[in-house]
Length: 254
Image (cartoon, rainbow, N blue to C red; front, side, top):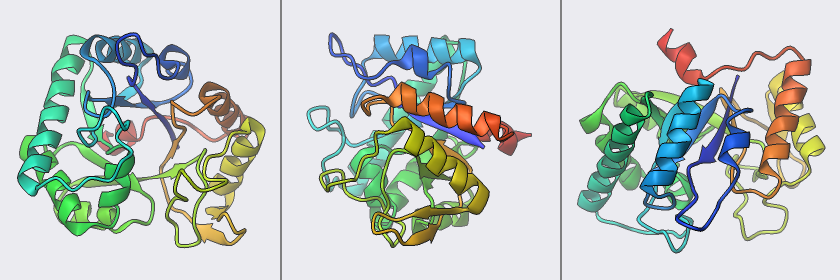
């Protein structure tokens, strides 16, 4: 099992998350590429720290939306979206090379992530961008979403992820952030929930309905309050249960 988090999201004097502490816990880092968050100097620091820790790196691409942290729905043209995703991955690849590591996967962020889960046009644009730049990259998306099948149909490796700190709808989608109970905060509850999911393959939806979630990676959002405590709790619970944690990229490339 892989444990990932969204990092590199600080911007100038504005600090988001605790990358140094999180990198001591996770096995994969989804690093911002400057469109929804992150500045070059901060991104480079995070990449160097990830390289020193042996944490796998992925490009966390998003809409061009610094003010909204990439969480506002947008409808860029296909030409814009393809170019924007290529631009972001390419920028991170350059910084990663300077940091002594490499970009091994792509995980869209925020509104883009949720939109392409089921929007065929924007999903096709993101997949086209990845394929045109480096078809060896792995695509990471929401477990059970059509985009994972679309990615595989186009020849990309695709990995599904489950969210430790987010509530699910009965249909397997995420509860919108503005809804009550959408974001989970209690480390012990989150950790117990993830261990139960690893053992049973099911998670309770927000209404209590059990839903089957098949995934190879667990995400703890780096910007959530108490994110490091939650990630530590999840890792400790999985370690104690004998669940081996390593980057999914290593398993795919073995």
